[in-house]
Image (cartoon, rainbow, N blue to C red):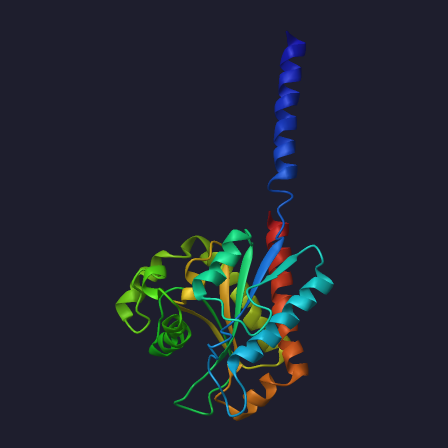
Length: 261
C-alpha cells in the first residue's frame, strides 16, 4: 500500500514538472507581424517630396530583416512586402490567422497646423485623451473609405464620429499591459538610443489594432510635415536606426516576458 502511495505522489509530481516544462517555463514569443501602414491606392500622409506608404514599407522591411538576423527563432510575417493595399481588417486577420504573439504597425505622422512639430509617438489601443490624438486616429482610420463594404466589415464605424470610438474602450483590454510595455520600450529606444525626440506613448482608437487578438502597437516614426524630419525619414541610415530601435524594444520585451514566465 505504501508503495502505491509513493508511486502516486511521484506521478503527481512528474505531472506538474511536465506541465511547467512544456507550459509556462517554455513560453516563447515565436511570431511577430509587422505592418507597413497604407500602400497601393492609399498613400497615407505626404511631405514635400515623399509618401508615408513608401517610408513605412522601407522601415517595416528593415525591422523584419534585423529581427531575422539577430532573433532567428522568431518568425516575421508582413502584412505587405510591396506597394499593395491590404484593408485594415485583412491586416488584423493576417495576425490572428497566423496566431501571432505581437503586432506592430509602422506609420509616419503629419501636423498640417504646424510645420515645427516633430518627434515619434507610439500608440496603444484605447480612447483618445486629446483632440490631437483623435485627429491622428481619424486620419489613419479614414482609409476605410477606400475599401469595399467598409460598413459591413467595421460594423457601421464612422471614423469622423467621436461616438464610434467609445466602444473601443472595451477592446484590447486583455492585452493592454503588454502593449503598453512594448510601446514604452519603443519610445525609450527612440529617445535614448536613436536620438529622436519622443513625444511619448499615447492611446487612441485605431481600427488596425481593433481586431488583433494579441498585444499591438502603432508607431508614428516622425512627421512628414516637418522639413527636417521628412529628410531624415527618407535617409536609409536613419531608417536603419529607427528599425534598430524597434528591434531592440521588441528584443527586450521578448526577453522580459520569457524570463518572467
